[in-house]
Image: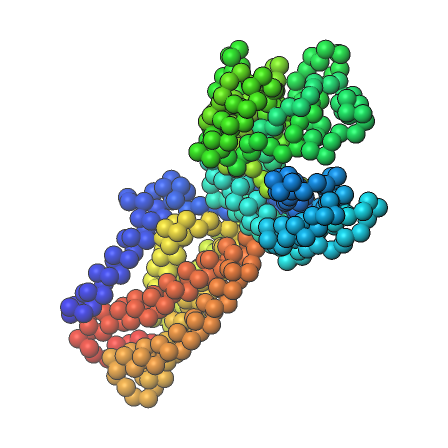
Length: 535
């Protein structure tokens, strides 16, 4: 064996050993292979969900924030107005603005509210300005809320230790849908609750309360709650009037929100019941300290997803920490753990609703694996029999190259952490066909060269040189198609595209490098004599 062939064999041996070690460990075992080769939802079983982000919630929140920002700016500039009120999700009105301050009001809108359009200056009350969010900015906020929801859901699921998940956009433009696939999840109800929980934490100063009902709370203000206040229900029981629930009137704008959180973790309240403690970042701690210092003696409502968890009284300045209790009975231990998790991962920008749910059982997954493996084995055996029958000894060359192609394919899947799906198995079978097709092109070219009277050595060298460009062209065309399938396809299509891309790349190595090395090794053993290739 000459040095060139020996060096090639060492490269092939190194690639083979590395690939086997990647997907089956070293020494290779079936148990390690099951651990390293990740299975997708359709093979392992799990939950398939399609969610829709209610982006109107995000637009409504942006409008409320703009209202409060404008309110504070008008008060700083001593511009008198009757009220600021939201009329639609993306529209609000400034009612009864001081006519003498019209130019100042317009200047504030032009300089500080560039994302909003002044669409009307008429109304039942004089000097009523109607302001609406610009369409382009509204769409940007909707898209941003979907992206943020995807990131938040991914953070929550990752924190639970669920692996090989698929979380991505789903559906067409404007549908605001998210696809979530959770392989091997044994408690889908808990995962759904954690994903769906908005987990919007707000700390709001209490203006009055508690009251036995929302109507009683409004009656305390003459039947109409001021625009800067709102009535929220509480999870606490035992209102003096004997009502089943309790209601507080709180400031509409939160002093501190979940955006100011630095961390959250399970803890215990003063009675030893499960609770959730949190701490704030530097900016939030500074504002929290100022708010508590200025409102000693007042109550501060801890609001989670629009419901007051507790309303403790401020006894002194508080800076960077707080605790959320679960009302009179406290949280269940698992609920405290889950609440800590969702608070750490951030609040959803909008609520979500479930459009579709499919559960794939482990039994169905096992059936899919069995059917896929059966199809792959039948395809592999059929191809091997055909190649050995039609090309005889050269068919052994093609079989070795094809098996090595599959070894490299599974090694690459394990290295990149790509999940093997049922469409992925179809990609493996297609890879077998593509690999054999490459060998057929090479063998038929060698046949032509032999018929033209060339020696075996010359036929092999010439055939591989001339077929190389053809193989590059065909593989590149298929590779481009597979890349587009991966970029624009959904989960199952992506699984097919991943295996096809890896298979095409490994096939170029086996068809050109490995197959040629085997031919040269045989020719070298025959002292470059004419051998019966029988091609």
